[in-house]
Amino acid sequence: MTDLPTSTARKLGLVIDLDTCVGCHACVVACKGWNTENYGAPLADKDAYGAEPVGSFLNRIHSYEVQPANAPAQLIHFPKSCLHCEGAPCVTVCPTGASYKRVEDGIVLVNESDCIGCGLCAWACPYGAREMDPVENVMKKCTLCVDRIYNENLPEIDREPACVRTCPAGARHFGDFADPESNVSQLVAERGGIELMPEQETKPVNRYLPPRPKDEWAKDAEIDVLAPLLAPVAEEPKGLLGWLDKALERL
Amino acid sequence: MHPAGSIIVFTALSGLGFGMLFWLGLGHFTPTYWTGFVFFAVAYALSVGGLLASTFHLGHPERALKAFTQWRSSWLSREGWLACITLGVMGLYAAALVFAGAWLAPLGWLGAVGSLVTVYATSMIYAQLKTVPRWNHWTTNVLFLGLSLGGGALLTGAVWPAIVLLLSTAAVQVYAWRAGDQRLAESGTDMATATGLGGIGAVTAFEPPHTGGNYLTHEMVFVVGRKHARKLQNIALILGFALPVLLLMLPSSHLLALLAIGLHLAGLFVLRWLFFAQAEHVVGLYYGKR
Image (cartoon, rainbow over all chains, first blue to last red):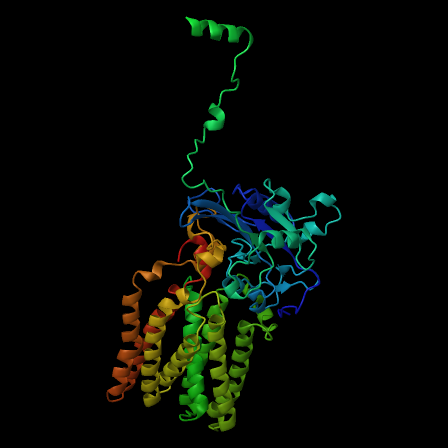
C-alpha cells in the first residue's frame, strides 16, 4: 500500500556538505555507473552523441552564485538526489503501489514491475528527485544504493552508497538519522544541517550543511597579501656573502 | 507543466462525458429508446474515450489495471474506481431507458452523484499537488466541476443551467488566472528555500547540472505557453463561454446547438492547454527558470 509508514525503525539518508563539495560530478558518474549495472532497469541515455542528448540520472549537481550584501560573491556546488522524505508526497500519489517507503530503514523505492509510468510521483516531488527512464518508461530514483549497503559480497568499506564512497572531497556522508549518536546526526547538530523547502512539508531526511562563514579582511587594515612571500629570508648576510656585502658598502 | 495531448483530451472529454451523465441521471431530461441511445452513446463515447486517452500517457499501459489498487491514498486510483462504478450504475440506468423506456429515478440520482464525485477526483489529481502552487487551490476543483456541469448541460440541451453555469465558470476562470499569476510567489517557495542558501545572500542559478535538457526540464519546466498566454485566455473565453451562451440565447435549433457545442469544445481544449502550460512546478527553481 502507498500509505506512508507512521514511523520507521531507522532513517537512512545522506548529509551533503555544501562547504566541501568541489562540484567535480564524480558522485554523478559513480551513481550512474552503479545503478546502470546493478538493481533495476539500467539508467538509459537517448541520442547520447546526437544534437539533443537526454538520459536518466538519480543525482545531479547544480551550481549557484550567492551574493551577500557586503562581501564577495560565492559559488556553491549543490548536489541533489532523493531526500527520502518522511512525508514523501511521491509515495501517496502513486496509484499502483509501485512507490513505497520501507518501514525498516525509511528508504523510498520504486517497484519497477508495478510502475505504469504515469509520472504523477515526479510531479508530486518538489526536488526533482524522480526521472522517467527514456527507454524503460518506468520511474527511476535514488535507492540509497540499497543493493550496496546490505551487500555482504562487498568489502565492508564499500557498503555505503556509490556517491558517498566515491566523493574525493568527503562532502557526502551516509548514516542513520534516527540514531542521535550517528555520524550524520552529529554533523547536523554541529554544523546546523538544513532541510530543503521545509514549507513543502515533505519532512526530508537528507540534510545539507551550509557553507561555513568566509574569512573577512579586517576593515581599514593595510594588508599586502604578498607580504609573507616578499619578506627577506636572511636579515643579516653571513660568511662570504657577508664580507662581500660589507666590502661593496664601503666602496 | 508540459501540456501533453493525451492528458488534455482525457480531462476535457471525460469531464464533458460525466457532465452529460450528471444531467441525464438527474432526470430533468430522460430520453428513451433511440433518442436515449444517441444521448447515452455520446456521453459514454466522451467519458470512456477520455479515460482511454489517458492511458496513452502511460509508459506501461499494459499494467494500467494495477492503478485500481491504491484507492486508500491515491486520487488517481480513486478516480479510476469512481469512474468505473459511475459508468456501471449509469449503464443500468441507460439500459432501462433505452430498452424499456423506464425511468429508474433513484439509480439516476446515484449516477449523478457518482459523476460529480468522479470529476472532483479528477480535479484532485491536480489540486493536491503542493509542488504546483497554481493548481493547489479550490479554484481547480470548482473549474473542473463547473466546466463539466456547464458542458454537460450544453450537451443535454439544458439551456438555462448551461447559460448560468458557463457564465459563472467563466467568472471563476478569470479570477483563477489573475490570482494564479501570484500564487507561486505567495507559496513561500523560492530559490532561497529551495537551496537553503538564502541566509547568505541573493541566490542565482550559475550553472545547470548538464548542458542539455532532461525529463524534469521537459516535463515540468515548460515555458513556451507564457508568451501568448493573455491572447489565448481571451480566445478561450470567447470560444468556450461567450459564443456558446450567445448561441443559446437565440431561438433554439439543432444546428445552432451543434455549433455551440463545437465552439465550447474548442474553447475547452484551449483552456486545458493553458491549465498545463501556465502551471509552474517548483522544481523549476533549481534550474533558475521561475
